[in-house]
Length: 136
Image 1 (tube, rainbow, N blue to C red):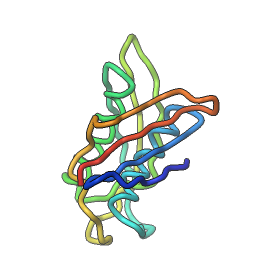
Image 2: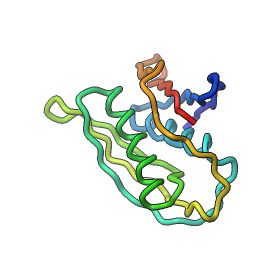
Image 3: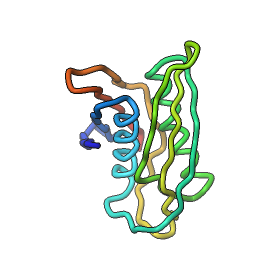
């Protein structure tokens, strides 16, 4: 699941691609983790989460916001993200999991929030592309 960190004035942006929306969401979440920490130890336990929203863009925003919330509440860095995105009765759903590395085990830069600034989720000939700016 490829992602690229992009410089963005005082913020940091992630551009991610995937063959499916789920792969793209997971790659974006991996980019969020990479924006916070360069090296990640092989420890931590997986946790699950489910997020719903009215649009694909809102779903990506809420999913990434939930990962930041999980970081703050569980004191873990969510890494090795997996996600599946579906549409159910006009509502978008992401069923996801991540490995939560204890923050005490890493040197992490704080990402304060996900933003809607320049956010894009779009279909491409090869699958999907997402672009998200994070406030650091």
